[in-house]
Image 1 (cartoon, each protein chain N blue to C red):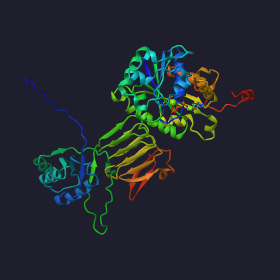
Image 2 (cartoon, rainbow over the protein chains, first blue to last red):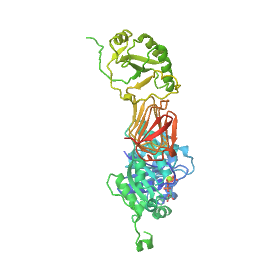
Image 3 (tube, rainbow over the protein chains, first blue to last red):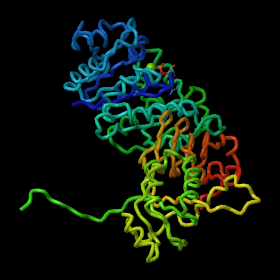
Length: 269
Length: 240
Ligand SMILES: Nc1ncnc2c1ncn2[C@@H]1O[C@H](COP(=O)(O)OP(=O)(O)OP(=O)(O)O)[C@@H](O)[C@H]1O
Ligand SMILES: [Mg+2]
């Protein structure tokens, strides 16, 4: 039985796909057989960030409609063992996913994998609801600004009322806060909320803080999940996050303004 | 041996207690009608006990029962009765109850109604609610969620997020931060209050009288606070 983790946020563009790719890859690196499922039907982003866009033949909707089976559709990552991608369709509209269809596919994946990472679309409409409905755990991706925090609060409400676990009266979805695009300098200037502010408002356990980083942009431009860039701050922060998801206690890093030395400044540390 | 078992166990139930100096039918009818109009749903078919502590008259309990039924109330008994009153009450089929401790004590001020000041104050009806139901929410109320405690107090162990709404016919107690809206006394009872551990509300309202966030951003913003209706306006004060 796989553990199903939804990566969600409410607000768009906060780093869900970046985080899904990084966390999925990190779990596979830790030896867990992992599949990342792109629920963002119509946009198709995950395959770009994973660098497998030219290998997409069939997609999630094809599998749901019975036009292809999982074996034909899953894309095996070329860099990391145990890592697979179930791509979304670019040509369908977002209502192509049905609850029964999604359940059938997740059940089938569940028999094969240790972790299923669901990359949710933005918003609180059917696509996002579908992505979170079957989840066991949720990574709530939040940027340190008021509107993102508000939308995360909204999504947390959905997780506790609109999920399968809520509807069937099972133990609730385990919620993790992932703060991304964190910029300690701007926090210091009062332009962004601090880790403590966000934790206080959302009142869920913090699983990671990913700094705002050029490395993320470089990584997505080269179609490589940033967690594989082990030298980078964001890569290391995602590695820490994966360890915490697996139950390890790891101290938080990259929370304070770092004084850049001459060498670092020269090479953009 | 009988197959049907029977059990008789002691139990505690919430009851409303009526205090009124004049128990004549005509007077009580108009006073009660006015009281009920403030919160019609709240007292609908509510079980009522009449407190006779400060009353030596010999009320007509059968007629009182009739009146309560007409007003959609259920008269179940009396308390604080003298010997003669006890007998009369029992003959009318009412229970005679030991005076319990009132959990709202004497703090329930009768709302100063628009009685014409020249006339001497008429007998006032104070319906004290002995033990109101309460609805307890054990987690945070998130943005977009709404919770309504009908005919009850609302107790929230967590925070109320921005964009969330908590509503009660009774009082509201929030042990976390209040960043959304809190509406107490929703069916019109202005004696209800809002208590919260950290006041950052978008809106607070008591019996339809409301304040928006900017009216709250003073001394108590981000602090523990209590909101109540006093005289002609809402007032905010410290919790303890
Ligand atoms: N830690 C970071 N530092 C700098 N840029 C980042 C970081 N995380 C994400 N970004 C950038 O933010 C943008 C949005 O990221 P991403 O696509 O992962 O968000 P999303 O939540 O999946 O968006 P959508 O809601 O559209 O699906 C991308 O350009 C990405 O490179
Ligand atoms: Mg995305």
